Length: 188
Length: 188
Image (cartoon, rainbow over the protein chains, first blue to last red):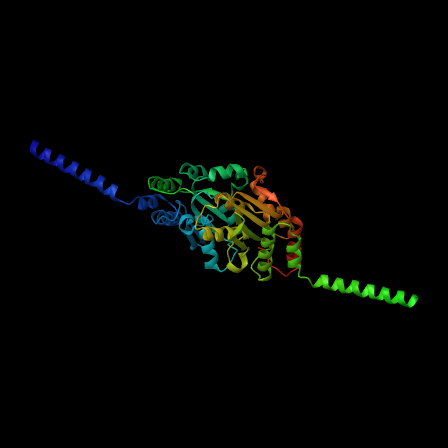
């Protein structure tokens, strides 16, 4: 009887360690994506993941939605394009402009993995985007080495935009940031 | 004697009216350019003039200088590219990034016909541009129909950037704005 019990316990431990190995083998990208509750934020995370693994820039991905459809998407391409303005939001706005054949993105909603800097925020306003959902905060951006927090203080904050900027799926986006933070990378 | 005096007066009036006609015939573009004292601002004005007459967007031209050479230039292309982010400054920054093969524009100075909005100002900061010279003010931009002043109030101003943003050749740039204001145009 004791022999069977030992065997049972051994099998149980074997199964537990196999499960743990399988969990480790799940790509972090998928993990971060799966953590996001919102479909569009999931897409933004996947955009960012593609960008960081291709060495294009920081962990910032964005999608633009209109009437339930994605009309624009993009990720940070500052490094690959030598373009300091190629943040994820700017890239997505340019993409949506092309898709819709208009500089006026009224009726569109922007989903982005990191709270927009003043450049991207003002770009969203110029584009007449209705609403912005962001994952990680300005402070989170600062913690992985970007100067968003410095510039934000310089300009005096965003107090008047509280109804325009809404937090969404921060935990999933922090997972993305965590992955980026563990990689070899250039901060600009 | 009276006959000669009359003839003299007639000749004087003829010369005056010919001069007036010649003055009218000088393209306003050249007039605005010639009013600018600074070489780089002159180039920025010519960029803007080319842009408005091609119907590309607002009267905003920019050049970027490094060690006395122009390394980037551009004008507003919001309308022609359906790109709400294609302000003159952003276009010039992207152009300089290409020329220098870098996202880091340290050592560069930006000259622009209208005081940069928060998008362009923050873009200049991300690009590590040393200094920004502007012609017309944020208020001047507002007076010809653009929302720079609205957004500026929303973000809480630019008090901490007084040493970064310097006024230059405003009168010449106002001439450019005046020309734009007299044209058929789309405000975005």
